[in-house]
Image 1 (cartoon, rainbow, N blue to C red):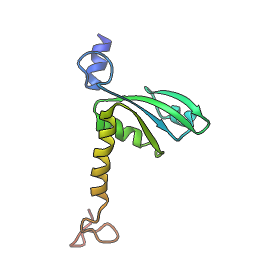
Image 2: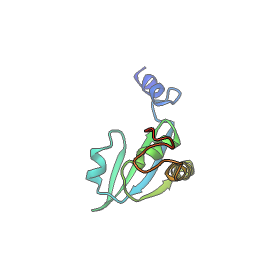
Image 3: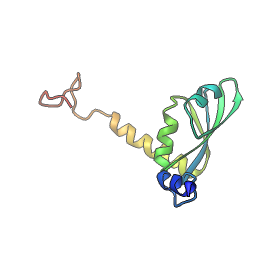
Image 4: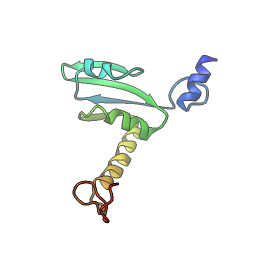
Length: 113
Protein backbone atom coordinates (compact mmCIF):
# COMPACT_ATOMS: atom_id res chain seq x y z
CA UNK A 1 0.00 0.00 0.00
CA UNK A 2 2.83 2.42 0.85
CA UNK A 3 4.44 1.87 -2.59
CA UNK A 4 1.10 2.51 -4.28
CA UNK A 5 0.49 5.77 -2.38
CA UNK A 6 4.08 6.92 -2.96
CA UNK A 7 3.75 6.11 -6.64
CA UNK A 8 0.52 8.06 -6.95
CA UNK A 9 2.16 11.14 -5.38
CA UNK A 10 5.02 10.76 -7.86
CA UNK A 11 2.64 10.54 -10.80
CA UNK A 12 3.14 6.86 -11.57
CA UNK A 13 0.42 4.26 -11.63
CA UNK A 14 1.17 2.37 -8.46
CA UNK A 15 4.72 1.15 -9.07
CA UNK A 16 6.17 3.41 -6.37
CA UNK A 17 8.86 4.66 -8.74
CA UNK A 18 9.02 7.94 -10.63
CA UNK A 19 7.50 7.72 -14.12
CA UNK A 20 10.53 9.56 -15.56
CA UNK A 21 14.09 8.55 -14.60
CA UNK A 22 17.24 9.89 -16.17
CA UNK A 23 21.00 9.80 -15.83
CA UNK A 24 23.40 12.71 -16.20
CA UNK A 25 27.00 13.59 -15.48
CA UNK A 26 27.51 16.85 -13.60
CA UNK A 27 30.69 18.89 -13.30
CA UNK A 28 30.33 19.07 -9.52
CA UNK A 29 31.78 17.04 -6.64
CA UNK A 30 29.58 14.13 -5.54
CA UNK A 31 29.55 15.51 -1.98
CA UNK A 32 27.90 18.74 -3.20
CA UNK A 33 25.27 16.92 -5.26
CA UNK A 34 24.54 14.42 -2.47
CA UNK A 35 23.68 17.23 -0.05
CA UNK A 36 20.88 18.40 -2.34
CA UNK A 37 19.52 15.08 -3.59
CA UNK A 38 17.22 13.07 -1.35
CA UNK A 39 16.20 10.29 -3.69
CA UNK A 40 18.87 10.39 -6.37
CA UNK A 41 21.79 8.05 -6.77
CA UNK A 42 25.10 9.92 -6.83
CA UNK A 43 28.38 8.31 -7.90
CA UNK A 44 31.76 10.06 -7.78
CA UNK A 45 33.59 9.90 -11.11
CA UNK A 46 36.40 12.35 -10.31
CA UNK A 47 37.00 14.97 -7.59
CA UNK A 48 34.85 17.55 -9.47
CA UNK A 49 32.59 15.26 -11.50
CA UNK A 50 29.77 12.84 -10.64
CA UNK A 51 26.99 10.72 -12.11
CA UNK A 52 23.42 11.42 -10.97
CA UNK A 53 20.40 9.16 -11.51
CA UNK A 54 17.21 10.95 -10.56
CA UNK A 55 13.47 10.69 -11.09
CA UNK A 56 10.56 13.08 -11.48
CA UNK A 57 6.91 13.18 -12.46
CA UNK A 58 7.72 14.64 -15.92
CA UNK A 59 10.69 14.96 -18.26
CA UNK A 60 10.70 18.80 -18.15
CA UNK A 61 10.39 18.60 -14.34
CA UNK A 62 13.41 16.29 -14.22
CA UNK A 63 15.46 18.55 -16.51
CA UNK A 64 14.55 21.59 -14.40
CA UNK A 65 15.50 19.79 -11.18
CA UNK A 66 18.89 18.84 -12.62
CA UNK A 67 19.37 22.37 -13.96
CA UNK A 68 19.16 23.75 -10.43
CA UNK A 69 22.66 22.40 -9.79
CA UNK A 70 24.08 25.24 -11.95
CA UNK A 71 26.81 23.07 -13.48
CA UNK A 72 27.71 21.72 -16.89
CA UNK A 73 25.52 18.71 -17.67
CA UNK A 74 26.08 15.72 -19.92
CA UNK A 75 22.91 13.70 -20.52
CA UNK A 76 23.61 9.97 -20.47
CA UNK A 77 19.98 9.06 -21.15
CA UNK A 78 17.27 8.51 -22.03
CA UNK A 79 16.48 10.52 -25.16
CA UNK A 80 13.34 11.92 -23.50
CA UNK A 81 15.52 13.74 -20.98
CA UNK A 82 17.71 15.17 -23.73
CA UNK A 83 14.56 16.40 -25.52
CA UNK A 84 13.27 17.94 -22.28
CA UNK A 85 16.50 19.93 -21.89
CA UNK A 86 16.15 21.18 -25.50
CA UNK A 87 12.50 22.11 -24.87
CA UNK A 88 13.39 24.06 -21.71
CA UNK A 89 16.35 25.74 -23.44
CA UNK A 90 13.98 27.02 -26.13
CA UNK A 91 11.48 28.19 -23.52
CA UNK A 92 14.17 29.92 -21.42
CA UNK A 93 15.69 31.55 -24.51
CA UNK A 94 12.30 33.12 -25.32
CA UNK A 95 11.85 34.21 -21.69
CA UNK A 96 15.27 35.84 -21.74
CA UNK A 97 14.57 37.93 -24.80
CA UNK A 98 13.47 41.53 -24.41
CA UNK A 99 9.69 41.62 -24.13
CA UNK A 100 9.06 45.34 -23.89
CA UNK A 101 10.20 45.69 -20.29
CA UNK A 102 12.10 48.83 -19.47
CA UNK A 103 15.14 48.97 -17.23
CA UNK A 104 14.22 48.49 -13.60
CA UNK A 105 11.60 45.83 -14.28
CA UNK A 106 8.83 48.23 -15.22
CA UNK A 107 6.31 47.57 -17.96
CA UNK A 108 5.60 49.85 -20.90
CA UNK A 109 3.36 52.16 -18.82
CA UNK A 110 5.70 52.30 -15.82
CA UNK A 111 3.94 49.63 -13.78
CA UNK A 112 5.99 46.96 -12.10
CA UNK A 113 5.48 43.44 -13.37
